Amino acid sequence: MKALQYLNKYFLKYKYRLLLGIIITILSKILSLKIPRIIGQSFNIVDEYKNGLISDTGEVKHQLLINILMIVGVTLVAGFLTFLMRQTIIVTSRLIEFDLKNEIYQQYQRLSLNFYKKNRTGDLMNRISEDVSKVRMYFGPAIMYSMNMIVLFAVGFYQMFSIDAKLTAYTLIPFPVLSISIFILSKVINEKSTIVQQYLSKLTTFNQEFFSGINVVKTYGIEKSIIDNFDELANDSKNKNIDLYKVQAIFFPLMILLIGASNLLVIYIGGKQYIAGEIPIGVIAEFILYVNILTWPVAIVGWVTSMVQQAEASQQRINEFLKQVPEIKNIENAPSNVTGAIEFKEVSLTYDDTNITALNNISFKVKAGETIAILGKTGSGKSSIINLVARLYDTSKGTVLVDNQKIDELNLNDLRNQIGFVPQDPFLFSDTIENNIKFGKEDANKEEIVDAAKNAVIHDNIIGFKNQYDTILGERGVTLSGGQKQRVSIARAIIKKPKILIFDDCLSAVDTETEERILSNLEKISKDKTTFIISHRVSSAKNADKIIVLDQGKITQQGTHNQLITEKGYYKELYEQQLLEKEN
Image (cartoon, rainbow, N blue to C red; front, side, top):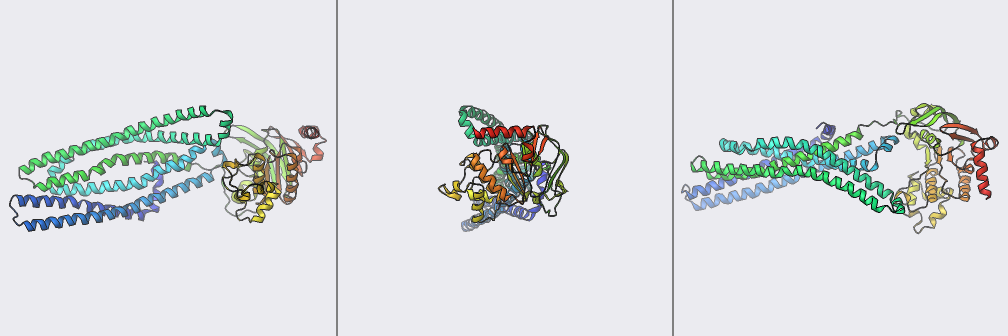
């Protein structure tokens, strides 16, 4: 149970609640074990009356009535304590589940972008949901039933030994077989539980990707192929679950067999002792009740063992992520004032997942408030520059300076709070358009939202919708066109009023006329802001203070629009080509 040791901190956090629950458990089970003794005494009274040892019928009835009332009273109090036990231990397990999910989610937030490139969304979701649920069972039902078992065994066997040691010894004969069986089966359950959780992650990932790409599936008409693949994966998962439950299914029949054997021994050995006059009839009744009361905790041993083994397997999967150290670390806790001056000094970047060198020894400067445009063919390294400015990655070589300070020495939260980013593939949430724009500034008022939408040239589209700014978008903004999604993303970035604006080819899905209107607005908005414009269009770059042309991770051209259209190279060729297209 090495993986579960990670959770010891939660035992300490909720120690008083758990301790109270354990005390209540002990009291409730001690009370419930009083009932066999009372019933045994009742049998003895009746047997004594039958054999003429007690002649007063009224006295027998009175004593039996008292015993019945005692049984009812003890049962009610034990039942109430059992209710309190569940309210403490089970509720505590829910609190720990809440804390653990938050801890995992916060770790997900801390982990770097590279982590998400290597791990699938479905697997991440499964670990924070299904795996945490398995771990909760360890804190709740496993602890509660384990305490039930320990108390019932300790108190029950003590009372049985105090009544008749010989009969108790015969009753215990099946239990060594039980212990060995549990030891062997628990190891098998642990292995099979891990496999089951892995397949559950695969199913979650498959479904998440299918639903996200449903438009591609339908466009290509490959529903049947997808269903066949899902059936194959689901069948594999089903078979792994059946393998697990086959092993688990051995427990309960085995428990019932052993308990049945104990009952037979009590009746046979106890009956012989009663006939020999060694014990009263009430002892046999008492022992049968004790054995049957202990049936559930004995039977539950298998279930608890299974729960603990599954929790161990799930926590091991959770620990894999919790113990990962974020590649991008915030080493500066003091606030950092960002104005927007950026410099790249001989910067190189190699992505470790693909081993592709995206940037190779590039250097340039951008003054605070300047606009820089970056052009180049697909795969030239344009977006990699943006990734370094936002510190989504750290350089492989060289240094990125922000306001003449190394970027990794700045407070990471303050740096990113001063960046307004419009990605090439805009992501919108399944929420209202207004809330999607307010994502850039949570406390923005209606006037600011409308103003940002107008500057992004999306306001007229929004008011044309039935619910206008209260229109609920589909997943990833699927209800909007590509150009509309880009413009809502632009509005979200500019409403933030950051020191650094980044537009990563965010006008590719809009027409030329709309592009010119947006660029005109952005020119006014970005006057005092450092602005990065990534584009394939000269029209987006021509008004920039500086233009950089990239090719295979290297800067091949650098200057203003007027300078570059007179130089032989990529920029001039692109300019002439797009000018010709516009004329046609």
